[in-house]
Length: 299
Image (tube, rainbow, N blue to C red; front, side, top):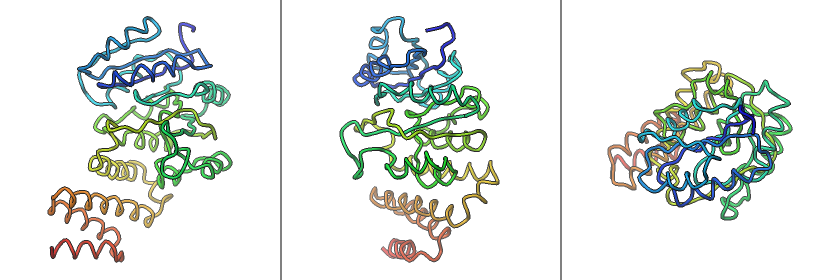
């Protein structure tokens, strides 16, 4: 590896020592080798440091007081020497072709802000499919390019499958450190609105499902998702026009509905009614939302 590598791979981790070793191994086994690996320990209380130090000089280890995954990733980027950034989760695995595939495209298209690809599930098919992005959708993205509606309708970007220009990352201010779950969607929106984004029909990482996944916090995931959408619309006035009022209202209303159901399940009736009222406000003609609103108001 040269003094200034082509790619900086950044792994932010917190108390995942049992999974981290396998993740690091998958990165070190890349066919493409012009990269540095930075592990940012976000205040772990387990033996994360020992796991990382066992790999020796192949890894740059950074420690910070617990500040959340977005802050840890931003810290890693600040120390990165590469012109391109690969952000990996500490519980997933890179495919051997990960950097070879993404950087192979990026070096020939230096005007791109981000290039991303597909992933598959480590434990076998999930949600009736082998890959995170369905094959038909994957082919469509490759053939016709990525549109804002693609990012909006389905959260298709996984940063574990992405390579981001460091200049583009810094230009949009990096990760929003107030977000702990939906930071990838937020960053993808901002990168898309400020630079070019490309997609490759390749599987470059393996997603591991387990009880420690941050996305399992449904309340936080939904409230952050709503915040990210509202932030997109507030910061980029053209986004609302591109997406259309009906599409935006339908997505936000559905998230408020899911939020209401979750709160009802956890015996938070007042909060549930508040959320379902927001869904009704956004889609006043929805029979389903009105039914739940009336039912929860009466009982």
